[in-house]
Length: 272
Ligand SMILES: Cc1cc2nc3c(=O)[nH]c(=O)nc-3n(C[C@H](O)[C@H](O)[C@H](O)COP(=O)(O)OP(=O)(O)OC[C@H]3O[C@@H](n4cnc5c(N)ncnc54)[C@H](O)[C@@H]3O)c2cc1C
Image (spheres, rainbow, N blue to C red):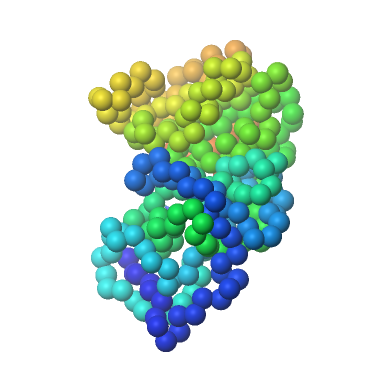
């Protein structure tokens, strides 16, 4: 893995690379965090399921524990930009919420990990992506299947489109390795408890004994295959009444796509 660093003789950081502020940061684990970032001016319009692009200069400090196999490569200071699905509702118009996992060998995330509230970074001027509910008929059930931070676009969709008193069902299947990695669990459990129209089905592949996990164990593929979704919906899955979104681990996405035929939204934003 190459490591880019800014060099002192060409290390200036243009002002426009710092056009937004971290207004909140919440750590779930050492490697998983929710960031809220607010632009200096108005926030762009977006639709639930779209993604934002954020960035930091190569000269920004990075987490010391990041892994590198090769030597550092000094480069002209440049902006490292990466896409992140927006987890907030588009009705929240002063910040975007991002659910991010640290890639220790990565370029941007080890730098992001040093940011705290009030720190500055770069936010792109618009949201992108077609992984939205635009094409989903309003009376269709929605099955949201995700692993890891693949949950992020669904949180935006739920916050924006789900209503407890509307007939359409939302089924959320979230897979993680450990119980502590089930981001947004409290919010989703509350909705599951209070709303008959939302079912939250977390599944953990490697539960730790001390977590006393009594939920599903295994991959999301097994939940998809074992009839749990139909039981939650109260009717068979059908392309005429249900829309399935899939986001996250590529192997899981492949497996689910090969499962019984449904009208699927194929990956959308993650393929942009
Ligand atoms: C449309 C879109 C939406 C995205 N939404 C999110 C999101 O909501 N949350 C989020 O955390 N990430 C999301 N990503 C991934 C994100 O853009 C970055 O790729 C990721 O944060 C790694 O960036 P980096 O610069 O630290 O690592 P890089 O330097 O880009 O990558 C280093 C290496 O790590 C690999 N890698 C990238 N992501 C992961 C990962 N998650 N686990 C293990 N290895 C990885 C890369 O393939 C590469 O080999 C999204 C990507 C796209 C295209």
